[in-house]
Image (cartoon, rainbow, N blue to C red; front, side, top):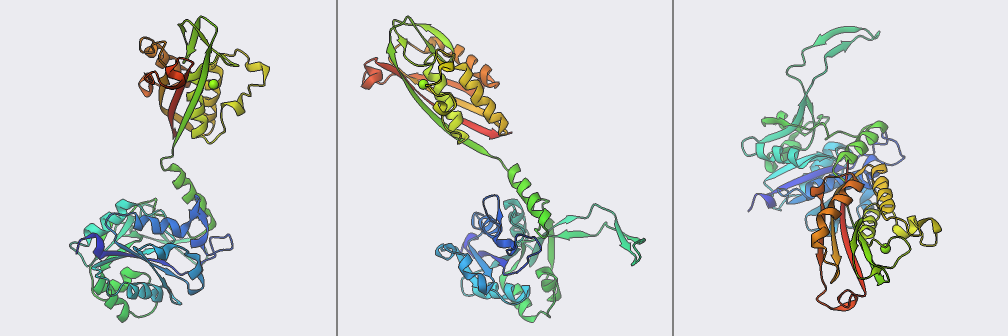
Amino acid sequence: MSDTTSIAAVIVAAGRGLRAGGGLPKQWRMLGGRTVAAHAIAAFREHPRIGLVALVLNPGDMDMAPGWEAHPDVIVVPGGATRSESVRAGLDGLAGRGIDKVLIHDVARPLVGADVIGRVIDALATSAGAAPALPVVDALWVGTEAGYVGGTRDRQALWRAQTPQGFSYDAIRSAHLAAAPGAADDVAVARAAGLDVRIVEGDERNLKITGPGDFARAEALLEDRMDIRIGNGFDVHAFGPGGHVTLCGVTIPHARGLVGHSDADVGMHAVTDAIFGALADGDIGRHFPPTDPRWKGAASKVFLLHAGRRARERGFEVSNVDLTLICERPKIGPHAERMIAELAAILGIAGDRVSVKATTSERLGFAGREEGIAAMATVALVKA
Ligand code: MG
């Protein structure tokens, strides 16, 4: 059996903890768009080395997990009255499935990272147990009942324990069956049974949600994760009378002009719309209605500057722009460098983040018949 299919996780989510506020057990409260439980389950399901997840729920919460049971890599198990009983129920639920190693995780640590899970699994190759922890960096005092410092403790050998705590499956199952009630965690159960538990490096982000303030901390950590938005834009303008076209802010002499309410800069319009699209912020027509006389003949630079400002106000930077102009004529190639420089300057980004390409449509369709010019753009925004 491969490594992947023989390593399981037990996620203990049967608690009734209401201390975190919100009137719901904390595992069912929302955090960055999904429940705390959903974050914890995803961390293990998406880990390439975990083959099966046993989710232990309060018997009264079995309908809180609609759909999870449908996944072949998730089993949902009713828990017991205490944490130890719930862990035991999860371990029992994994019986007969060829599980070799198991990681037991507290649902209240929804932001556990793949690297922490990987370190625990690595350590299990040479140890019956392994668990993540962080060194204590603050000085430790013993307080007196009257509220004075009564002494200090050496912090050198002390660690702050986290989960997941990993074990050989058979060994931890036997240890739990033999355990006296009241063990602090699964490491305590394992040690009472004589198993060695190796300490691996934990992660400050793997915080435990206990009080109301922990939700705000967890939300802030989630926001720190990379936020990338992609948008696309498409625009067409028809040829009409005139002696030049304006494309990406560059005036190009041509036998005809482009028709439009503004300067009809089809390239800049497509890029502007791509930014609005990435922000889910409507389109160019909503921000600059063609019925508004202010924009008659306007330089389209105004539109792109506005879109760039909207992105920055929301905390995003334009990471790159890729624009394709579709026309038979005028030839774009000789002007592409100037177009790139113009777009980059308006958006305040380096020129090597802007691409302006061109293609014909092989004389097919309106562009092929030289009735107009089309443009399509893709923009990536990254949370700064
Ligand atoms: Mg337009």
